[in-house]
Length: 416
Image (tube, rainbow, N blue to C red; front, side):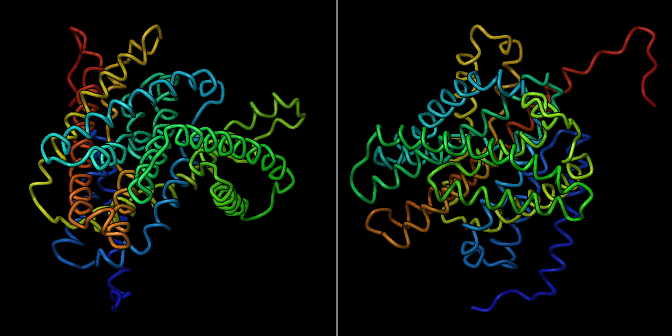
């Protein structure tokens, strides 16, 4: 199978970066998420103009997805405040657990009741789309101008819920292959992933803080830091931990060097992962994020247009489940004042796309366990749900941002 023309790929690469920049500016001015435009652009390139072959793109999915997740979560960790993260971690876990369980049930109800799927297949779809994607949530928090404590809880919650979704969905896939599943095994796997990933991220970040002190003034320290993040992510995954959690906490540690130095009673309170390095990582994050959403749109192949309606319906139900989860999860907390803004954080993306790809791959290798038709329906519904939830979240952010703007005084001069 012949690959695409390299010259065409260079042209498309430049076009994607320019599009990403333009829609990012549009997002800053209007609140309309850039992810929607990038997804649709990828869909046009793949499914309609066939400039990109979805079958070729699926081959590199296991590489593209962890790379995007690592860069984005490390970027999110760099912007978190350590003390706010410690204070908000328990509440974030509660909201994440409630949100995932209610979202999983709401999404599973659509194929179970309307398409007559079996319970396991329905719950598999619910688990795949059960969490909000950190990639979009992180970019929308600043738009709402939420207090740091609220933004921190939302970032932690999105990351924690992503682990829930991945672990439960993979467990359900295993149950389809092996014919059995264990709730106890799922719980044990979650604890293992969080504990190994969290400890490795914190310890790796502290050790690299001391290493950066010795590398002060040397060239390429950012690239070496990125290499350490890659090694840490892969080693944690190989050890049975969560690579995404390690990336988030590695970034959190580096972004809070002065706090870490104070807690360690270290005399050198200087910042080694400085603003220039953070800015460069932000550029890399923009590059990866832009290409990932175009890639995500390009790998979609719509097998049945009716599935798009079912996916959109499931997306609307997720909004209701999110409101319920936030209302319950913020009881007795100061976060309750911001529950409306927290409740609109429903966008799905990275994990949902990756997990739906895994189902497609399983359908090719074990069609007796997961039929290609069912895997195609999950892929269609997942894509539709991703677009629907991003649009719902974008609309909610836009309305919330307008409400948050102070009304002009009686003698105020309207903007010219």
